[in-house]
Amino acid sequence: MPTLDFTTYDVFTQRPFSGNPLAIVEGADDLSTAQMQTIAREFNLSETIFVQTADDTANTAKVRIFFPTAEIPFAGHPTIGCALHLAKKRGLDHVVLEEVAGLVPVTITNDTAQFTAPVVPFDCNIAVNPELAASALGLTTTQLGPHTAGVHEGGPRFLYIPVVNEAALQQARPLQPAWDQLMQACQLDSAYLYTPSFNARMFSPTAGIPEDPATGSASAILASQLLQNGALDKDSTTKLQLTQGVSMGRPSEIYFEADVASGVLTAVRIAGSAVPISQGQITVPSA
Image 1 (cartoon, helix red, strand yellow):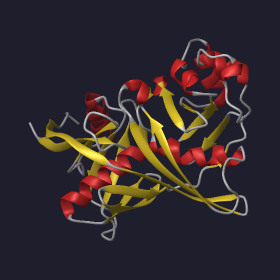
Image 2 (tube, one colour):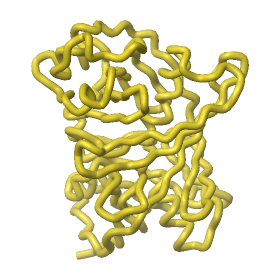
Image 3 (spheres, helix red, strand yellow):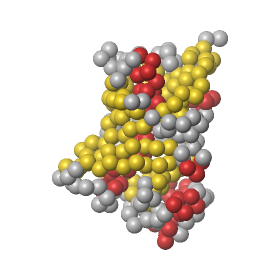
Image 4 (cartoon, one colour):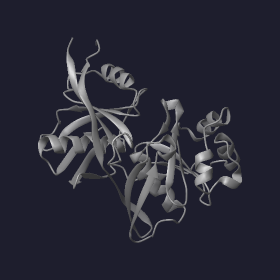
């Protein structure tokens, strides 16, 4: 049976067996969407990225990104991991990935990749009931942070819930039936929790991801949440280090920059490292 080469990386870390695992499958030009979904389900990682020949020869590669359950237009940790992999393999210091969400240029410096989010994040103006948000996470309203919870989009869409401290962050977990009620009310399936010191957790159990150790796209969209709550300077660049995955034993470090001009978010950049973990061949499933 035919096979394709794959490599796995741990992303948003410089240490093996931490960060967010990623599978990169190369030579995927002839795979159907159904075959890609089958392979992603087999790896059963938060994301698998498939590398194809670029539509435009000026770009490095065309890529498609899959959860175990569905394709998504853009994600941060596959972008970082795939860009570093292709840069090392092809001797590049600049990579342009053709993603479903659009072109994503990535700059490589000292084994770190930085990309500008393909969509400027924005506030979705969906009201969030704080009592429901707290009960959906096994918390009390006094454990919610000073920011107002909100739904924001920038390709993917997330509910952002501030919590008051690290203890509340570690206590949080999705609880039924309040979790499903919260997700239905907000018309999404993922919640991103963060503390004032920018430690974070991301839950998306209905998408097949009980918890994600590092979520680059959510980190990028966090800029909209912070701006909405007055936590970004209105005429400068804010730089932060976000920590995620600690509760899973897979600590991750995500570097974040947000440009704001006259109170308007103009660009968000995300950076991180990645380390290779394994490589091999995977059987191509029947069409």
